[in-house]
Image 1 (spheres, rainbow, N blue to C red):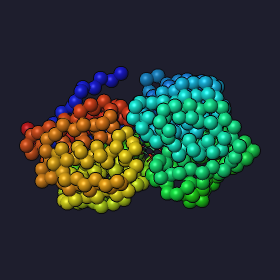
Image 2 (cartoon, rainbow, N blue to C red):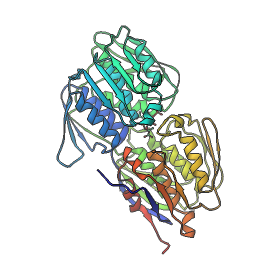
Image 3 (tube, protein in one colour):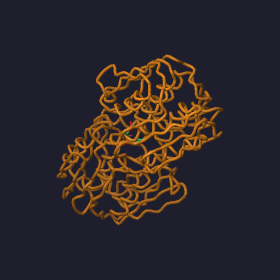
Length: 441
Ligand SMILES: O=C(O)C1=C[C@@H](OP(=O)(O)O)[C@@H](O)[C@H](O)C1
Ligand SMILES: C=C(OP(=O)(O)O)C(=O)O
């Protein structure tokens, strides 16, 4: 267990430069773990993310009877697939605050025909799951809420799937559609399974990650745009043998933003121009703000002349990396507006409210709407103690506030309760310290 202090004082840094090797992608790691578990055959996963979210997935799979081993001290894992049938029919599973664990597992377990309970930390019990439960129960599964209707904890009972056409809403989280897609081959048998999306679908690039990885595990999905997805009858997951996890593109955003804010060049390794993660498109926003981006197959670099332009854009396609833009906006030449980010309200915390409160502490003038945020930068960033709301991204993106303005007066940015970074990036502050250069003293 890593030890974290109650708070961290980030000393002011005038310059950011260096290279960071990224940890594995959370979204890819947890999808691959489940797909490997459900496959026929054994899968070697290279460079799996080591973090709270992958830990809960690994522990849940173990409780469900899936055998896996870590290869020595590495982040490589061997998973022994169960060919679509989980051996344990009754289990109580702790899901922490991992959306990428509870949502896909709920769908997979609901079609398994056993008796399972799923619960998590208190915030998990405030994060919606009703649209997924409705979609599943409408075709014969039996999922009950044991607390608040619409939220975990859940009790999944033996159910019987009686229809092969499902409908799901996609306007609260794309993870519901991801969950149904990943479970669809388990329901298919001699029928094709079709999933229709009702209304708007948010966070679309995460669906591309799902489809891409399902294909790597041998299942092809036919689609009509974003409206309808069909898994043909008789498809089963089969191990690809060895599969590699890309570096996390959302984690990359903090370092790349640092390069844009404070000169650079800052290079991240592990993700590049062929990434399957939508969050690599974060660099387009940095470019709009005036940064220079270069990309290789497995790296991205950001630099700038230190002057950033304000941005006004729709960030629905990159909800996680957009938080980094909200803090980078402190360094822009005018007010920035982040639009279409309503999903922030139901993630690790109400991120619109949390972001507005903490940006105001460092001197910004912030306007908060139901699904947007307008950030007017201060003349000079104030020293402040930033609360992190048990949200890893609040902790990580506010490290960027230590990069410039406050440095002129030598004041630190305090990050309270930094341990929340363990959700996706336990060593974040060590990595940040490698690139934040203090040229003042
Ligand atoms: O499918 C995924 O891996 C994710 C989808 C997104 O959630 P929403 O679809 O709820 O916006 C994202 O915010 C989350 O961190 C990871
Ligand atoms: C929203 C996030 O997590 P989750 O996968 O739990 O939804 C996130 O990592 O920013």
